[in-house]
Length: 159
Picture: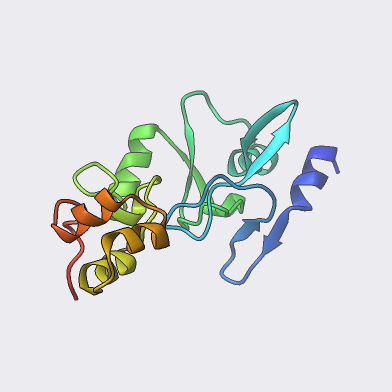
C-alpha cells in the first residue's frame, strides 16, 4: 500500500448503508449535515478527502470537474458514492434535492447559519427576552428581533 492510501484508510469508518465516514479533520459543519467535508494533508496542501478518495480509487480528476456525493453525506469518502460533474451539475444536484431555495441556500442549509428551524420556532413562541435568547444561541439581539418580526427565516412555518 502507498503511504497516502494507508494514511487515508486509517481515517475511514465503514458504516451500515455503505458510507465510508471520514474520521479525521473536517470543515465546519453546516446545519443541514452531521458534519463538514473531510480534509487531508498531501504534499504540504490541505485537500478534500472525497477528492483524494476519487483519485486513490478511480483515477485522475479531469480539470474543471467536481467530485459530487450521491449519498449527500459530506464526510462520506466511499468512491462508489461519488461521481464527477461540473459546477453546473453540482448546482442542479443541489436544486433537485431541494438543498437550495430560488438558487440560494436558506435557513439551516446556509453554511453560515447558527440556528436550526426548530430553534427559530422556539424563538418565536417563547416569552424570554431577546437579549437572553441572543446569548443562549450565540447570535445578536437584532437577529432575534428580525426572526420574531418575520423579516428573516420566513420559510419556517409555525407548525
